[in-house]
Length: 399
Ligand SMILES: [Mg+2]
Image (cartoon, rainbow, N blue to C red):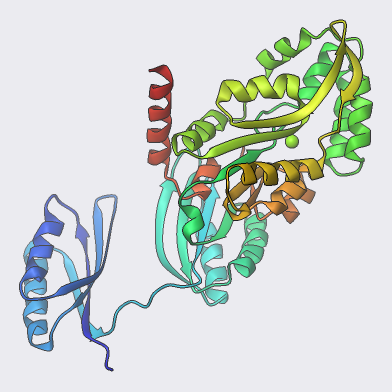
């Protein structure tokens, strides 16, 4: 069976109100069927791409009307008769480039990688200009796993962040987002804030650093650090909670996720006495962290029950996903430390956030700029949608 006669129309020029209506009227005479239509405006300059199916008899008339209209409106019009529809786009991947600034050379690097892997950029759009610039590319046909591997290296070498995820239904609908707390949701390490109250801040900070680099067993180092807290009054929890500094974009991320009806959890090798009330203040659905033993209003320097380690973090991700009836493909995990690695690997999308090199090397995606709300751009939301969601969430909270 021969392919239907189709005509590809591209129109560019200065945009003005009512232009698309006029152009559509010019092609609507006769029985032309609309097979595809895309339009963008960049700084007042319009680009339209259209694919129409029409009979050979009508083709000349259609082309003539469009060229005449283009001339009278000062637009550049190309009419290309041919055969067939756009093929369906399978094996599509979404490539998100993020930078502050995002350079033309970054796009050049990304586009060259895509080309070298046999992919084509079908569509592109800007998602944000603040707090960073992000551009989303729709690429097909491409092996997303391979593309992710080469892009991660290219991005790190050239100084931009990049995320590659398979296009598909997983980008729509419910998801679970699980975050680490220390140096991810917040800029501090809770144990260091507690230790500072005990006058042992520097000592504890050094042990934390070694543990996060993966040089020191996490459980051993935690036990050692908690011992330094012995004798602190339990009023320290409220003081530390008040002193916690959220990561830029943390509130925006959570309020947008909640407004979209998504589920948010935090899992921490820090302490429930601070993490749980913090999660409640932020409207976070699930929270799990270590518990500190308190006797007669004083910390004993011991942890109650099992220590939250990297295996616990991954297990909590699985448990909360199961409780929400979500497959792991619908989970996103965000963390910065070595104890987040299992959780990042288990999640549908694992994001290393301002992470140590060892963590960055093994995560799907890494974000090197300190804005937690940029996770939303990786999910395909635009800055404008995020702002709308945040405003609407806060309006409902106040109502
Ligand atoms: Mg952390």
